[in-house]
Length: 328
Ligand code: ATP
Ligand code: FE2
Image (tube, rainbow, N blue to C red; front, side):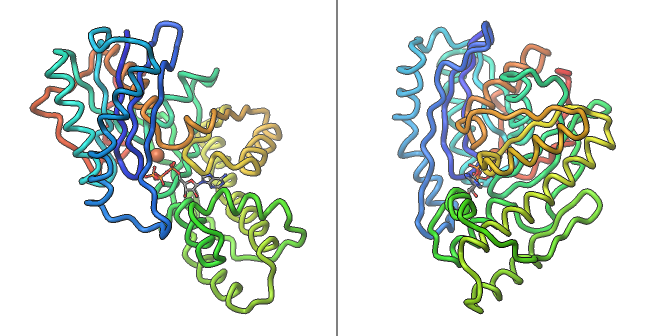
């Protein structure tokens, strides 16, 4: 079956077409709202999504080389996310489902980050370390639900990196710039490390870094290097704890921060040490994308799930463990 997926939880508007026969992602087109300041005004982002919607849709069909009639299912990200943005994706999905007379399925964005890993890699039952702009969570399947084993108590790690990079005047998005500078860093600067059980906290570290930047005593390179080592160690520690707790032997990375090679390396080393395996994806499938929405939609639909057009409203605050997982 061929599924058209739509992603619109935040900055990114994307449409992807996936064929579950042969597990092929036929197209995965995204257009992300960009800002130099890094801030985000919901109504402006929604306007962006409306502006690019037509082009993203036609590009996605062109790349996939299929006709709209060949689509068997429409999937859309139903939540969690920014209401203004979610509404554009949900509206588009409803219109397409009505127009093409095809079934519709609403998908949880966080769960989709995990399902794409199960679809594209050999991972069968991984613990997901999901580290993106707004989200930082460790998620795994247990007792009929996807459960959040650990999460950030304050900032998402991507937003934290972006704001740190802004203070260092490295530009936006900050993550890739920090990665570049970190490679030149030589000296580890001691920084506060805050893991609380399975959760992490970044607020104290953020304040400490502001003071260090203002003091002018430290090089950008050493600061970036030390930030990566500290924050990624925190992520790896909570991911490892979730693996130990659940007895799972696979780790999957997800979210934009997972593009970071040092984080990937640290996860790989941790897994090697405990006889487990760490799985990575192409960057296009780490960042917010619609392929993962289509893939999760296909899994759900095959298990008999679907969403009535009248019930296809958005769920901005949906939590991972609120979703009834019938497909596993
Ligand atoms: P969310 O899914 O939580 O709404 P988002 O739309 O910002 O957030 P993504 O597109 O998954 O999420 O990720 C963007 C984040 O990833 C940014 O904060 C960016 O700085 C970070 N990022 C991208 N590349 C890297 C990298 N190489 N190293 C570290 N962080 C990175
Ligand atoms: Fe995401």
